[in-house]
Amino acid sequence: MFRRREPVPFAFLAEADRFRSNVAPPPRERSTVSQIAGRWLLGLTIVAGLVGSLVIGMPALTLSHSAQTQQPQASEGR
Image (cartoon, rainbow, N blue to C red; front, side, top):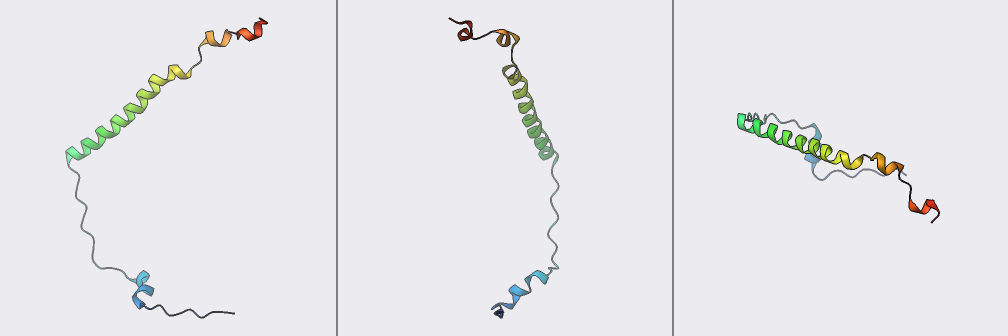
């Protein structure tokens, strides 16, 4: 009914979750001013592109009043 668990062939695998390293990773390098400016410019370019596409695309998404008042020719009974 109950199976016995087989022993793990590598004991260090069973204890790997309890292992903590005493070696600290090296500190992160600080970004230079040019790297920070480059990231800001990239972000600003992406935002400007999205806003520009919305500004240019909005007239195509709106319905003109003349298109709403026209009726199709098929409804005139011809």
